[in-house]
Image (cartoon, rainbow, N blue to C red; front, side, top):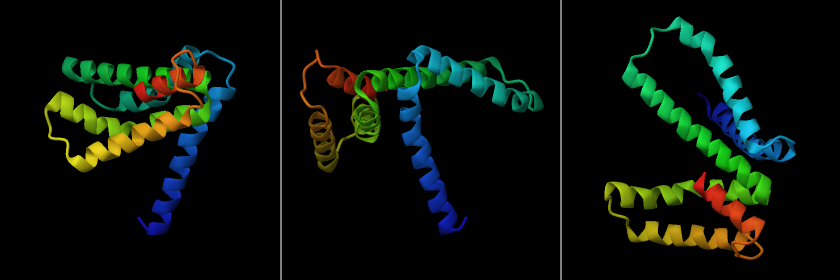
Length: 151
């Protein structure tokens, strides 16, 4: 792959990432309906490919179902955040996942979190607090930000 094609791919990915929130905000449907439509479209698109390959075992089916539940809950919480707080706040909250992944690795897998990672987590958290006009749980902006971080 040439650097030019790679850069084009990155720009297309960033555009798709940003437009997802915009389409979620413009959709008149509830987040559950949006996620159901996305899942239905994905299943119908992938079904022809699935028929061409061997059937998966029970273990693989359970792993696929678990992954599907995680992905569905991610989209549900993200679109809920978009509806509550808007595209900008929800997208910024969701995009903070690398910082919180470091924190979860330390808590769940007992990996050592270095000082620079703590600093990054502090800066990301401070930035997220500054995104909302007022940090009160009664505010839709704050609640949407929390849903976005959860997603």
